[in-house]
Amino acid sequence: MTSLAIQATGLNRWFGEGDARTQAVKDVSFEAFFGEMLYVEGPSGSGKTTLLSMISGILRPSSGTVAIEGQDIWNLTADELADFRLHKIGFVFQDFHLFPRLSTLENAAMSLVMRRMDWGKAMDEAMRYLEVVGLKDRASLPPVKLSGGEQQRVAIARAIAGQPDLLVFDEPTASLDGDTGRRIVEFVKKKILTDEKCIILVTHDNRIFEYADRIMKMEDGQVKAFQKGSRP
Amino acid sequence: MKGILRVAYKLIVNDRAKFGALLVGITFAVFLMTMMTSMFGGILGKASSTVTNVGARVWVMDPGVNSVASSIPMPDYVLDAVRSINGVRYAVPLYSGAALVKLRNGTYQAVTVIGLDDATLLGRPNLVEGKIEDLYGENAFAVVRDSEYSKLDSPKIGTEFELNDHRAVITGIGEVAVSGLFGIPTLYTTYNRAIQYIPSMRFTVSFVLVEPKSEASIPAIKGVVKAMGYEALTAREFKEKIANFYKYQTGVGTNVLLMTVISFVVGLSISAQTFYTFILENLEKLGALKAIGARGSVLVSMILFQATFTSLTAYGLGIGLASLTIAAVKLRLPSYAATVTLSNLVTAFVMVVIIAAVSSFVGIRKVIRIEPFEIFRG
Image (cartoon, rainbow over the protein chains, first blue to last red):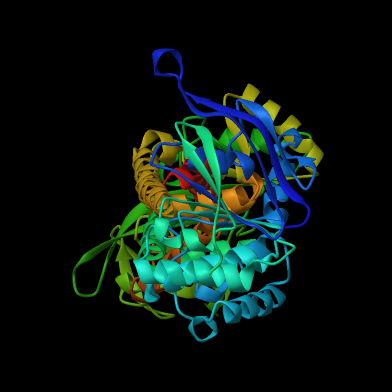
């Protein structure tokens, strides 16, 4: 592990009002480093996704700060924060969220297109990342023609195409069978993670714990423990 | 095309079912709107045909006149009085009335007879056969070769028939810019022959056609004519008066307006509903784009582009379809009263813009409100 990628301090998040008011995340502080694959693990309702949303600039915390590479992201305006996410963070969603009416290549190029890169250049660049995830020969197909694992790899290609510093995976194996899930995470660990990247992965799938560098265990909105993961 | 708009384009076009439904819905609405307004425009154009064809700059008439066909005769002194107005270069009488022609086969055909000033023949048609001075010959009439011409058995120079029990001879065949609304042939003759052949009241001058000395003298002419108890209108004002009569006093305008509004509502409903469904189907993906880093303005521009592109494509198709239909019908029915005018195009365009705006508003509201956090929560 090298330099500090994320520093979250005293994060709290409340939802609802009056009697329905509940605290999803309670005074969470942690650090994540470049070159690290950090898992956020816990049972359903433990606040993992809320925490992930706050550290990736999607959900404003009720209190506390999030600094990514030293930048307090919640001091940014909405547009600045959107630009920050676009350039610094890559997202891989549980349900992939690929556009079924676009080709695999066009889906993979989405973050590049959003950065106003020339269309042809964006496609060339995205093709390189499809090659990285082993889907170059599927580039022209729509995502619906791909298997779940392949769709997940397209989502990964989309996330890494912009070369973000921070990659955020939300339950990446939840929609996949066990073997495929393991292969995907192993691929991410071996091929995507570098010393210049930090990967935060939310999961409660213990079959992939072996790929974690550290595992942050959450329960009732609080961090209960940090465990060391084991490299394969 | 900017990359993100290209994505927007592909998203809408590649969803063939939705894109097809949007195109069909808006195209149909534009087609109906254009057809209705074009038919109305055609009717109004034909209703003012005599004003267009005669070509006088100022028309003097009884204030109760709503159209050329329903002229109210004025006494002869009105013509003399108008001629004496300062600012009038010249003024001539015009007769407009209806008569019955008995054809060789014994059947009758109603005709419009225009009686032109004997001295000047002001307002005469452009003759394609015969000489205009032959109109001074005995029982002479010129016939207009338009879509109604065949109803007089396509007469030639020298053809004779009975007109209100008088002998009539065709001495000229002419062309006019616009044929009449009522589907009956038009004959031209001299003013004196017209009032001689067609039974009329004590007064016979249907209109006084005025050529003012200058544009500036028209208001003064109008004032003097008004003081006499009559009305002087420029050709444009007279056409407006005729149009207003058909719009507001015949029910035609109301019906056309109603049909146009219904077409608009149908188009709007189909478009807004389909577009809303399209947005709903893509909402999660658009939310994911928002999470990835798309600004709200980017998503709004995508939706606006999709709505605008679809609407304008459908607008083009609708206008093209309406124009083709009108052209095809006119091949079979030359007198078909429908004309695609600039105002028809603008009206349909404005309505399409409203359809696009409402449809995109529905989508934009939904997309602006979506929280990327909801995408994470699944």
